[in-house]
Image (tube, rainbow, N blue to C red; front, top):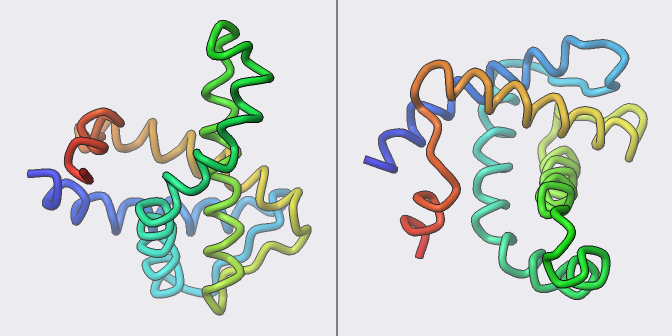
Length: 137
């Protein structure tokens, strides 16, 4: 069922990327729906391939800044990973451009994450992180 949910999420996430591209102050440019589809799949694949290396790389910083999990800042590191994936996808996909560099990546990733969560939850297509991790391993 997880694969089917992902296939249903893919065009929705692409539409959300198009919406993010239409919000002028963010500085995110999306050339077409095809570019958005390719970008959505790239963000997902990069996330699948890079989640563990990024968590290992950021793990020591997370441990120190959260006092080994005592201070609940995990959301901040998940958002940082989303920014990295968003920026990588923009770097890899022609037609997906971040006009203001890091600022566009930060704002675009934030809006993309929030809109994706709200829309997918509303449609009942959200895969909880723990279930998604179980499917991946």
